[in-house]
Image 1 (cartoon, rainbow over the protein chains, first blue to last red):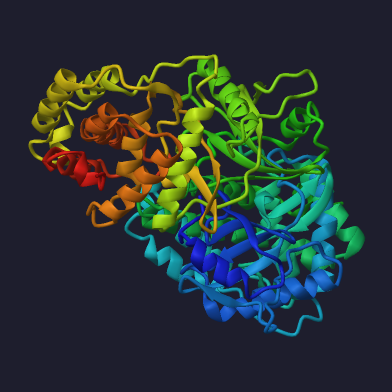
Image 2: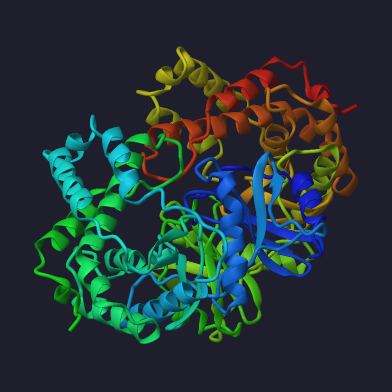
Length: 320
Length: 320
C-alpha cells in the first residue's frame, strides 16, 4: 500500500481550507503507488488526489515534477494538474511533508495489456515527448548509466543470494553498457517510469499518464525501451513481438525516430532492464518487513535483460 | 493495505454493467480495512465502494451483513447500503469471490479521538441498537466466550514468546470469565467491532458506521465494552475516564441501561479486551510476511485487560 503518513482530520481541514475546493467530504488512502502517500480526496467541488511526498522524493525536484504536469496538461496531454492554493502556490506542506493536491483522472490502468493498449501508449508517449520539448526546466536522469554502478555496489553482498552468479553477470553487463552506451540521440523530457500502472485507459482509449516522479531529461528512445520491457513481455516472460510492433509503430506515426534511435533500441532496452533489476535488487534487501509494500522480483528483469542480449538487432522488436 | 484481489477492467466493466449506475470512470484500491478487498468505484452516477469478500468472511453470513445494513439505513442509521443489480440481487460474484457494491459515506474516521467523538459514538450506537431490534435474521457471535478457548489453544505454543507468562495469565482470565460471564442481559444486533476506523465523522458530527462484518446478536452492553477499550484509552494506554463518561452518558440518553448492565460492564470489558488480545495474538503468528497488513500488538490489549481487572467497579468508567 502507499499510505505512510496518517493525516488527522484537523490537519486536513486546515490544509484544504487554503484551496477554493469546498469542504472535505471524505479522504481515503489509496493502495497504489509505492513512493508517496496518496489519498483520494472528495470535497464539495469534486474528487482530487492528495499526495504527501515521502523521503524517497527529493523536495528540490518537486517544482520540476509539478511544473511539468502543468506544462503538459496545458498542451493537451492527459495528466494530473497541481492545484494552486489561494496564495498561488501548488507545492505546500502537510504533516511535515511536502504535499500537493492534484486533479483526478478518470480511467483505470490495464491489468491485462492488449495490442490496443500498446498502440494507445505509443501514440500518447510520442505526444508527451513532443509536448515537453519547450518545458524550460531540466532534471538529469539520476537512474541512468552513471547511477547504476553505485546501485550495483550497494548490492554486492546480496546479489548472489538472489541468484548464484548474479553479481558477475551484472558487472559484465554494466561494463558493456558503459563501453557502448549511445550518445547524441534526440532527447528531451521523458516520463522514465511508464509501467502499466502509470497509464490509465477508458476501454481502449488512453485517458491519462500519472506518476511523473521519475520524469527527467534523457534520450526519448529510452522511454520506448522502458515500455518494451514493461508492456511487451507476457507473464511467463516471453517477449510479445506483436505488442512491441504496435507500440513502436504507433509512436512513430506521431514522432518518427531516426535510424540511430532504432539502432540504439536493443542497448537502451538492456540498460532499462538493468535499471529496474538494480533498483528491485536494492529494494529487496532494503525494504523493512513492516513497509506494507510488495517487493518486486528482481529476476523478472534478468529474464528481460537476457532476451535483449540475445537478439540480432532491432528487427526483433518487429521493426522493418 | 486491503486489496487482495486485482480486478481486471474487463471483469469490472461486465460486473458494473449489471447495475444501473452508468459506466466505470475509475476504480482504485483503498488502503483501509484488513479483511476484504475494497475499491473506491466512481461511475457516471457517483461514488461507491466495491467490496470483494475474501476468505475470512463466511459467504453464508453475507445475507445477514448486507441485510442488516439495508435494515439499519432504512431506519435512519447512517451506514452503507448494498446496491441491487437489475435482477434485484445485491450479493453477486466477481473474480470468483462474493462481491457487492455499497453506497459511499461522507466523513473521515477520527485519528485523534475527542470527547465530542465519544459522545457522538455513544448516541449513535444506542440508535443503532434500537434500530436493529426488529431485524429478523440472527447470527451468533462466534468471537464471544465460546470462541475464546479454541483461539487461546491455537496460540499455546507462541503466547509466552510474546510476553513471558502470558499463556498462564490468559488461561486464568478465561477460567474467570467462563465462571462469571453474565447471562440474560438485554440483547439484540450489535456491531461488535466499533473501532474508530469504523466510525466516520464530519467535524464532530457522526456521519456513518461502516464494516458490519462482525455484526451479530449479543448483549448490547458488549458493544459498549468494545468501545470502552477502543475509544477511551490514550496512546500511552492510560484510561481516560472523561471519555468513558461521555460515551456512556450519551448512550444512556438514547437507550438507558439497567443496573444489571451497568454492573456487568467491567467483566464485559475484560472479555472484550481478551477477545481482541486473542485474535491479535493469533494473527501475530499467522500473518504471512507478504500480507501487506500491519500486525497489531496484542500486548496493548493486555494493558487494557489489567486495567479492567484492577478496578473496584463500574464507577471507574465515570458512571454515578
